[in-house]
Amino acid sequence: MASLNAPHPEFAPGAAATAAAARADVAIVGGGLAGLSLALALRQGLGPDADIVLFDPALAKPTIEDGRASAIAAGARRLLTTLGAWERISREAEPIRSMVVTDSRTKDVARPTFLTFDGGLEDGALEPGEAFAYMVPNAALQHALVDCARAAGIDLRAEAVDAFAADRSGVSLSSASGAPLRAQLLVACDGARSRIRAMAGIANVSWGYGQSGITFTVEHERPHEGRAEEHFLPAGPFATLPLPGNRSSIVWTERTADAERLVALPPVLFQEELEQRFGHRLGWVKPVSKPRPYPLGFAMARTFIGERLALVGDAAHLIHPIAGQGLNMGLRDVAALAEAVTDAARVGLDFAAPSVLERYQRWRRFDTLAMGVATDGLNRLFSNHSDALRAVRDVGLGLVDRLPRLKGLFIRDAAGLTGAVPKLLRGEAL
Figure: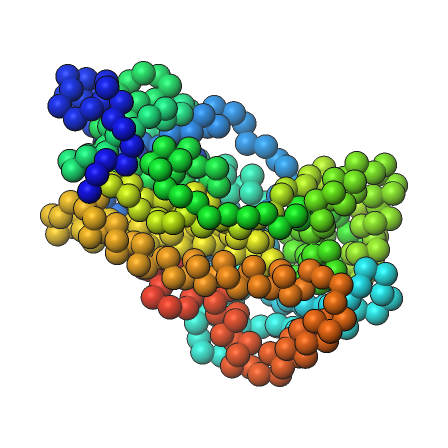
């Protein structure tokens, strides 16, 4: 296979600098939730003697408490437990015990409920007392994973990778410090605008939705009792997701221009808009973090792998948050790649060989594409003003609510427990 990008002269195979370069087993670019989780998974799989280096300039900055939170599916929670991180996270986590889906216009007084979920799965896929998902503030996740990575001896470097060159025997990297590094495998976990993916010349199919998600945390008068609500409105879904205490995370989808207008409103006017959508079931409500809009879009890399290179998380795929599966998909990538690499290493094979990376891609690509298509279709179906489409989707939601097996399949998929589930998502160590 040809080199992914033109070799930097200083790091071309055979150059004197390559011989003097420090060596690592795996180099990970991106210190977000996926990158840190992958470093911990590879530490477990490859053992304490493996050299794992993680690069991210953001590691030098304090974690920002920006009001964002993520839904951690049951499978992802098992992964974090097996990696030793959930114990540090659990006190900040709130289980989602029930879910309600409604469909209405913004100013409608009544919000008919078309789909509900309450309780476990009859097939025993969930353990006793286990929720199908948990809400956790992103800052708490980041803090816990950084602490675990340091305790595990991961080499965390607060610098960027400026260039790399791959060949049959390894990958040579240059970073901001100027110190060369030679690794067997390079993994890009550096987000939707991945520099590593771009440097590798991997094409990325993408489009925007013309929507932004406004995210923030609110306090409210009455307890939510672990109930999540998703109100489908013409501009996009308004989701209320439970956090510890009388707090909830809000993901409020609007057309981008409207989202920017809303967050620029004086507090009293923003409060009126919030109350109109939030409703009065939980009594008074007030924001306790700054509302911030984030543009929404779809992206899919043409391939998830290259020569001694794997793409993980948002570097490989980006989907609409309508189903709350973005981070969970990244953690499924982590579990699949870590297992493929570990299995190869334990039988003495080159764990960055094309056959090993192809196993990872086969494992993840279909699931990722299917979820991307599903979320794209759901957003187009629900984010519109068509009364005809509204009638069709409401009938469909009602049918799902009346078919326990079909509803169970959807919840099991949301929990990350369908298909060929990697060991870490089953709660098994590598």
